[in-house]
Image 1: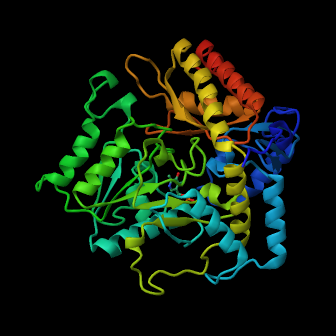
Image 2 (image 1 turned 90 degrees about the vertical axis):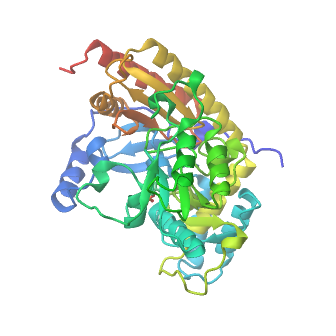
Image 3 (image 1 turned 30 degrees about the horizontal axis):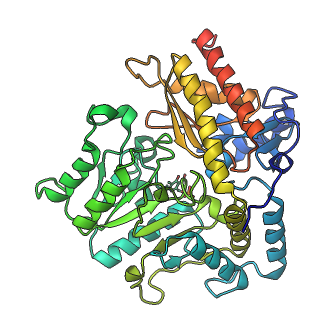
Length: 462
Ligand code: PLP
């Protein structure tokens, strides 16, 4: 099928970015104050980007005071086809009039989602399971499947990995700030160094790298005194998201696959953030021709942010007896309709190839900025999953989380939404809707670059 011709400018609100009043304006402040008075102190995004949202379209968000932002965060990577994508919205509206909840009983919407996933997934992953609605739920299901099939308890995850907030998923996550005061979660989770070359755990540079990170994983599994008993699975983000948009070396994932095979351990790829087109392939593991045993999906799967998650896995793992794993929300009819529409659009419109090209262009601009700036240690990423790591000095690589947070504020005040992540909270992250126009993306990077210069000219921010 030849790609559909799309005018990407028309998918977003016109005139972005448009700042009428420095955010938060009075109407936003009113809603923020109400929220602060009644909701949990754990609220975070509304503190980092103080605003209240009136509406959103494509890669743009309008706040209550008429400010229009270029959305380079896309609801934490959820809005792959953009806010309010017209075809996807239509599919969701139509589904609401038909049926909205049906447990795991088949419906045409469910079948549509399954058909599009069969089309998108590698042929080895023949089975799917829709559990609870969040990414964390998918991770829990993947853990349960691995434990059930292997009869083993331990897991190996990677430093910098983020897998969610429920007990099992949080145990696989490494960020201390999320875990402090909550331990122990689940027992026997071990962590291996990720292929984070900018801060290589073994002090190597790309020129003298012998993939010590995956050698270490091998050693954890091979050495009877490593302290790790044979795990049920190794779980990995093929490209790390919250860890700081980290693209490991090309050999990393194939090595992990080979090591898992040799030690007869399952491989789970967590594609909740890097999957479904984000990096220019439907799944990030495709960049290296690797096929996992289990893949976890959520975020973009619901098309327009309707909550849904899934795991897909090999036929040989489909050993669960009836009702071994259950739940009230086993899929979501509106999310099926919207998600199927979004994935169809992705596959039929050439969006993946466009994401790859647009990402390359954006990375080129960010790399240019890295070269000229004394506070950017590294700009990196793949497709439209990009990160810029801030340091106080390039030589020492001392992390500069305060600068990354100032960047978020400056960009927000100038009409660009970005987020902050990374091991040290010092990485500015871009996860824009994949339908962002080239002009909007370049404008966002221009504003980002101006903000970097402003910080360089006024490091104390006074
Ligand atoms: N796995 C990855 C890679 C993620 O990025 C996230 C969320 O950011 C999750 C799991 C958890 O998803 P959720 O927040 O929907 O529970």
